Image 1 (cartoon, rainbow, N blue to C red):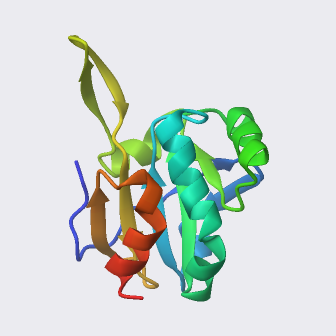
Image 2 (cartoon, rainbow, N blue to C red):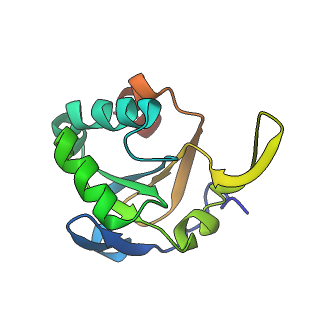
Length: 152
């Protein structure tokens, strides 16, 4: 079930390519928690690189970026190193964060049904309240949409 705008965002924590991170550590910052299907795929790479290229300006506006997929931390580490990604990527192999945010759903590809990650971004304010959801973000313009939705 997707959390509702205006309500407290579900708490999250997880292993990343560099250690671990939790929502508590990010209190006092705006957070763009973005869910993506898979490391090293064309759309996910384009999305991550757009966020990387705009990481400094996002930070200047107090916006922290955290990526989430069900890839393992070792795969995240290779992805982050290959593309010089400066933000944490949560390895949600047990789907706890994905399920808490309603970002894991049944998908259909060529008639085959499977459970997968729905590309989406949840915007959380400094107090931990969900303020907006970007459904189906444009991967090449993701950072710009985040800033627009946060009003910066």
